[in-house]
Length: 299
Length: 77
Image 1 (cartoon, chains in turn red, yellow):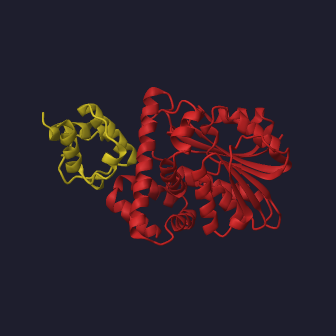
Image 2: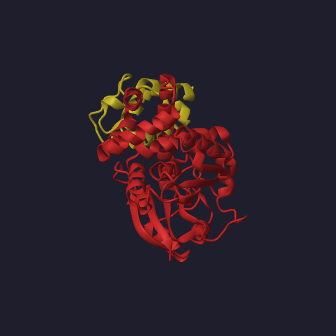
Image 3: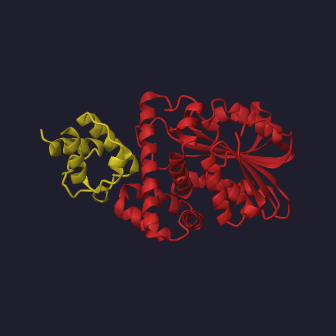
């Protein structure tokens, strides 16, 4: 199925192939295993028409991302003014979210710097836990749900509760978890990830939050929520997009130090970190879209 | 200057290559530097050249330069 996807991409939209081949060259084994798993989950019937549709979704998303990045480069500002604007225009719009989430899921193996983050999650974050432990995990804004599913696949006794403001995200993450046979250990709930109702201090062994920080008006609240809810011996996984425009990116992190300061100020400490950069930057590009991921603990 | 000549000028500027000869059949497979980022730079340069805005749906299914020139002609018409 992966070969069919790549062949369609090469035949129909070759300009999008180069960075994909870089991802494959960078992490051949993970590209193959993750790509096969993701495509299987998005196209369980191996329908060639669906493959063409996924190629279309992926290339349209990548095109729009790149376009927004150049507009941001010229204007110096992200397109969405606030979280509430992004919420009404994106998160509560089923049609937009369906295409957005499936495209974003595809980028996890097709974009070299996203694949690097997944590698970091698997190799550096998940080994903090023992496969024999009952790891009580919370995922804040799972989106497509990949990180939570990887955790459950690698840690067979772990359980996961996930909160997302978008009903479409919850439906997608829940459905994909069901396909991956980990659904018995999951609980996906439509709820604002920052909702304090019923929140308990130091409840979770693991708190995961991928691709949320940049969507918030005040990401400090997310750092504080993690610091409050993580157990003293627990581990958090947090990502932040830096100088990376998107339709629903609100908070502009200007560099990795911005994120570090925010995390430390919230009462967390950083145990490990990666800043992933796309390999296909243009010479005159001053705003390089990067992703920072870190493993954090209570200070 | 007709549409083809203006396309050629933009292509040469974007790809920094004065030997590019634009043809109807030309596609990204024919130009080594034509990747996903330069694709957007090309679209933006053509938007500026022709004072147009293209939607993603208009752009993403274009197979070659000929279809792109036809799109511009249609939108300008």
